[in-house]
Length: 290
Image 1 (cartoon, helix red, strand yellow):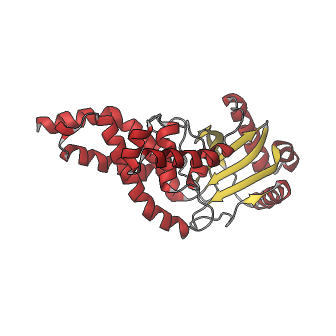
Image 2: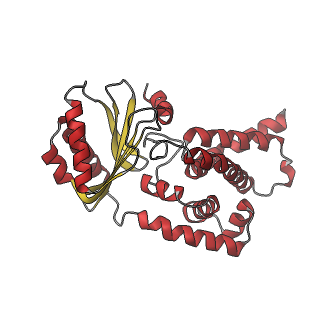
């Protein structure tokens, strides 16, 4: 009993890092928590006398569990209705930090599982390539190549300049007011020429079946939304904040369900609008807001 209590005590300081690794691999807080709990149970049953570096051992365990989980996740996403977005995480969440923003999470989704693991472990978490090789079961040269390929894809989606937090939240407030009041002129002044609108309803709430790309197409979508809102109860703003590292807001919509909206701001304009409506992805967020 004492040995298991000691093992549990040694696991807790590492748990936040393990959650960050798992969330970035899987894009789901619930799945990340399940993987980390599985790793915890394995840690209790492991022969810990042979483990030189517990943290490296646990990161390796979580990474391998995530690679297994991604096999079934890939199948689920192939049959997913409409665009898929990661589960939204607010900046108030103490366990999952938002140092990797939503566009980067989406870029990670386009990588192979091994590329994602190599990039995250080395570039994001600073793990040396020898340990990366141990974690994903490839040699060091292969891991360097995997990370390099991933890096080329991922950094294309990294904003060149970070957005000041308050300026971002101010623009989110202006966007909320304009989009909910039908102020199309106000919206026009905020959107970039190549803006993209992505809504994830998961087939469980109304949402577009494909991303809306381009200024004119997005403006048409908001014009339709403005017309629809005239006959519905108004959205109720719950709070502004950073959602997966991007300025945005949480609302309760006319159907009584939560919704998150995150804005990718580049050069002072909104280049991406990411809306999560799938109630499965908002359940955990809802629990934290009560």
